[in-house]
Length: 261
Image: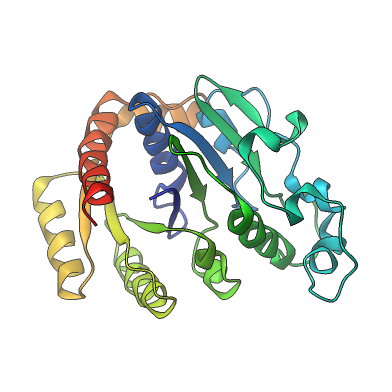
């Protein structure tokens, strides 16, 4: 369980889950690399208290126009660091921000109109994660774009585990079912759902029942935490003791599974 992708419906709380998960892993002694691969969500770096987002990794391959050429088997050998095995320590300092055991890299963002599709960013995510080599005490947590397009780009073929964030809504349940099917198709066994923003035990039980009917494993739930809501509203680092306690229980299960898969 070295490379974990966090995916789900837009608005389900993926970035909050990524932040809670990264903070929890750090508290347990891991060095954490957060990979921001959501090209449309601008504020993940603020949730960790970073002053600014790192330069996008797109810059290491010469921009969006050069991504396909860089990773094409028919192209001339590239000098980009991203075409070789990559370790966290190898990344140029302007392409990573770090604090207290957590580092963050950003694949790229859509910054202006008529910029074109996000496909090059998906390819770069896949290729970077494929080449990323982690030490025993390191883990990568990937904040995926909302929806399922990243499966079409093959990003999940470069990771070890998938966490599907499900909020209390019909659309979120439907998307979780689709994601679970897609992970099965690519041979991914380590797929679980995290229930997020649940308001009561009754809702938790209902969501769990609906997912288990579809054959989808639920690893835990995170209750609605007003501190998380307020931090998101104000654009400041995430602070939510209640949600952090819920994540700690989820991590207990995840790490135990990693010991005894």
